[in-house]
Length: 208
Image (cartoon, rainbow, N blue to C red; front, side, top):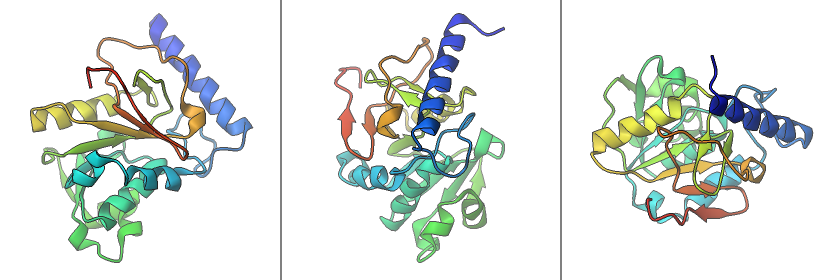
């Protein structure tokens, strides 16, 4: 049985999915319902990440496998950063894609199929310097909503457990995915930086 908070979270997801479809913001794969929605401007959001110090300083980045983060995965490889990509649903663990192995093939390697082709599977990924997650919705306190399966929180927790420290978490989203309030529970992970096609938002809370 869903808790009241879980029900409220789903209501936020449904509202964002519906609004993005209505406004024609979403792009392949469609429809966006039940997904981390891909959006027009995902490439622009990825390019803005390049101006963030935490990205510039990172040598290894964990980036979620969802479609709107494909441009981020491509740029990370182009920029010579090791890519750690959770497999969809964490069914096969994690893929490690080394940039030197995919020279000239960064776009292909940034896809799920390409990451399986060029990457190495592991259940124990190496430490990373930064985590980039997709979101359905996020608020200005840094609380995010994924699809509702908890994979994003698990990925962040594992990255921090391996690194034995708090790691900056970024989410790349469309401006329409920023909402006033995301219902939250004690175990929910927060993001420290929100990047859209038009802006970079650093969460001001001292806990980050």
